Image 1 (cartoon, rainbow, N blue to C red):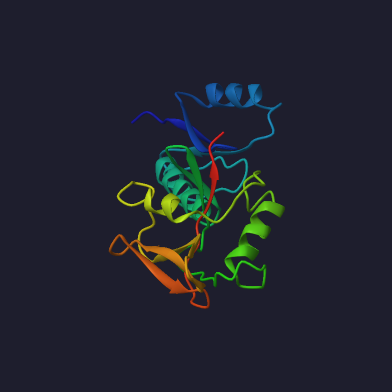
Image 2 (tube, helix red, strand yellow; image 1 turned 120 degrees about the vertical axis):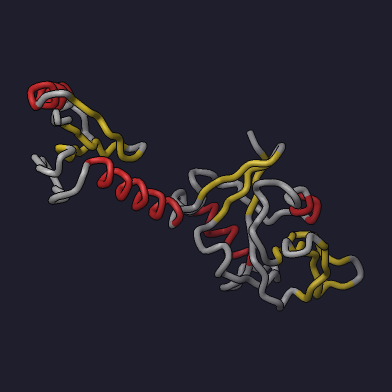
Length: 196
């Protein structure tokens, strides 16, 4: 069986697998990459590893790549991300299903308004945007039935309950209904901004 020589390149876009028919071809390719900032790890498919960095002893290159892609996906789950619906961008935080907020709107700790302030003041949390806001009830309703809707739970809106200053509207994505809840209750939050 002919050996296939592999290089796993760790790039800004994630791991990439490059295959070569000879050690010479592999080394020539690596030499052309020497000016890049990316880190490289080299593998031989048959299990003998010429690891330039972080060797995975005894592992097939494709198996190692699959592991690295899985690790990469896990890391991505721990990062904020943006999902889009017509005209809107939504900020999905890594702990969306675990973190709950009140909805007083006065910036107190643990309130949805404090999350808005934090996201707009932290480029990493706000993914470079500083115009996140609490969605209106109409914004939230537009998520129902889309591929971008939350998996479950009920989410606060900025829309007050007219005639009841202690209440605000929310959408329960378990059943798709709109409810009025006391602002002291703990609900989930997904921030929104207009698409530019």
